[in-house]
Amino acid sequence: SPNAASIQRADIKLPIQNYIGDFGGPSGVKALISTFVGYVAADPHINYYFAHTNIKALKYNLTQQVCEVVGGPCKYTGPTMTATHKGLHVTTAAFNYLAQDMIKAMDKRSIAKPAQNYLLAQLAAMEPQVVTANGPLG
Ligand code: HEM
Image 1 (cartoon, rainbow, N blue to C red):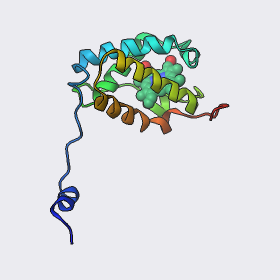
Image 2 (cartoon, helix red, strand yellow):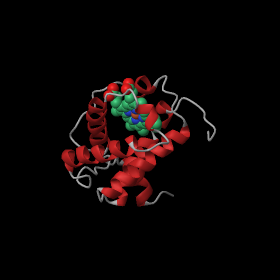
Image 3 (cartoon, helix red, strand yellow):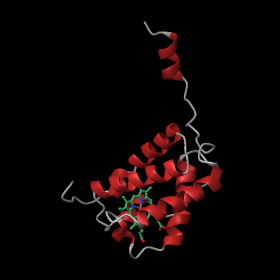
């Protein structure tokens, strides 16, 4: 027979988790994205993808998006992930290097690990929309 915990899990919809405080609010996210984009620009594994990118627009849109997915009040208003990355030939390996640059940036900004893991899970959920090509490493 069902116990109290299983009844709760089935019937009560929990709020989505909110980690915006751990990121230092919207301004903390903005600072994180600045650090992150700097690391991506310096990363020889993936920086060539961004050779023709409007970095100012990228930083703005990424800040809004990351702020939103960690529970902040911001709203991402840019194009869909599918539309944005179509034709860029992003590989799984490139995706994973980018994730590593985000971890490095979050460590640099002293973001708590549970909050880091939450953002990484949100980003991982977008991988099917971003990765459209195979490379030597898959
Ligand atoms: C979940 C992971 C990712 C997210 C959430 C994400 C998000 C975004 C966002 C919000 C933009 C800006 C759209 C705009 O300003 O119009 C963008 C652009 C871009 N992304 Fe990603 N991205 C991800 C992964 C990647 C990866 C792995 C690569 C390649 C290594 C990549 C390459 C690019 C490039 C080159 C642009 C600029 C496109 C252009 O200039 O038109 N992205 N991405």
